[in-house]
Image (cartoon, rainbow, N blue to C red; front, top):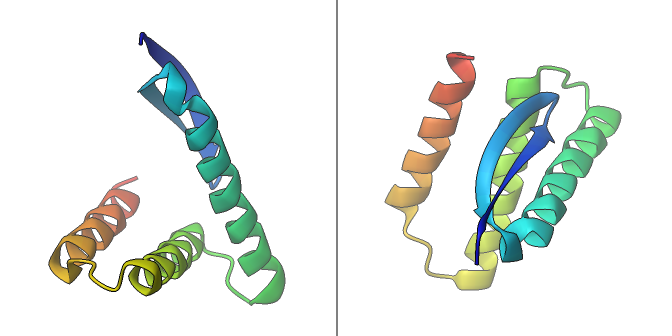
Amino acid sequence: MSDLSINVNIGGRNYPLTISRNEEEQIRKAVSEINNNIKNLKENYAVKDMQDLLAMTVLQYASETVKVNNSVEFDKLQDAVLALNSELKNS
């Protein structure tokens, strides 16, 4: 399959991605779910800072993953959250 260049908007920021064509629908659905979760958090809590909203979203999805898999490697998950937090601080 050939690669496809797309732009996605997560939390008000654009991210260019190069993906395989068969991943496009999955990526777009994931982006939609993330943005919907951010919107719901904004509406239901007094949190307005985008970094906090993204961190809360990551925590919710990671929590769901742990429930489903029961064997997530927590060190890798922690590294991913720390990397995301670092990237957001540097933005």
